[in-house]
Length: 101
Image (cartoon, rainbow, N blue to C red; front, side):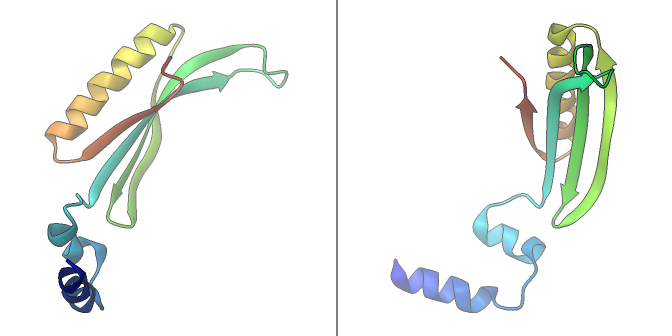
């Protein structure tokens, strides 16, 4: 086992994360979807539920934006799960995060 890791590390020197992903089993395309509160006032008493997307291709940020804002937490969570499935079907490793419970 030690020999395998020595060979892997020797081969890894000078390679980008994208080049190493076949060896490490990591998808270089990652999409994080956040369901979280978006406060509407400075006193933090009024809020709605936002669904935001952050996408990476390797170390490069492809997108960081809020897709939608909802009055209902349940609708925001459903929309976040739908976005997760959409980006997963496009080849992204997807994660949904934030206030989910």
